[in-house]
Length: 373
Image 1 (cartoon, one colour):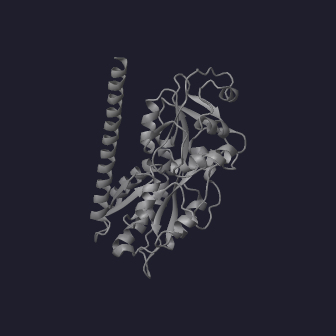
Image 2: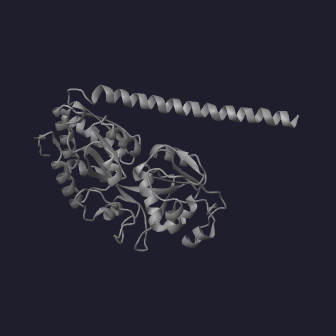
Image 3: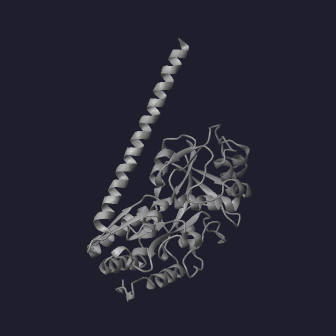
């Protein structure tokens, strides 16, 4: 009788599991269909009133504000889908969008595999927060090595001796730790794992860094919003997510930086981390910053555009519209909005390099329409 009851229970659990998988796949399929529809309708239209972009969820909060303001200012609608950096790179590689966004720049090898020269244009600076859900505790101090051991499953309870050593005077509960990580290809994951690789040799050797890695157990979630939702419902959970997605009820980790200081993620500490000289191609890493009081898990969001905008029978009017949009994103009017939304402004060096890269974007042998904001 017990075996029969056990069999019935297992059948029910499997049915429930497959039901959840089917619903999840259905939602993702509908989301993809919607994006493809937008691309097919607008990407090659002889119109500059609608632009289509896709990619990173990391800058989505500031993008939403920017694109809404830009629509009110110019009448141009920007339909941006925050599907993750990997998805954005896929769409720009297929030449099916006006621009993509990523928080992890493409390597020389990745660029060489794309048909056409891609430009990286830095547009915003953000911080990856290590957040946790432990009732009664709002702040903890953790080094990169300790965070790495937590996400590798070596530190399994919140009252572990290593966490207590960095947080004297705080009474930590014997509560299991549940690491939460991204299931999709993500620039946020790249920034986070790059910091852990810089901080812990074992992590660098066994786990590595990238937009998508093979995680050790834990809970999977899609996008920054999914990470936030998973963390809120997981007592004892720990997750990494973009600063603008943080909520007051969750705990925040002060992360140990390269100078030995434990730094809270704020607009000010993120901006300090980004106040460096940008290279000519715009590609650089801000993780593990050498700035004494800079937040060490800081990253850049780039727009990816083709240097030659005449791809896929694209109309010049769309190329001009894309160029004008990016020009505005680099203006004082746009950049001043970022700190109010939890992002840092690009430093002067970043603005100068971004404008220089944008000046090389053209349409066949023609220059694109210049505009001042």
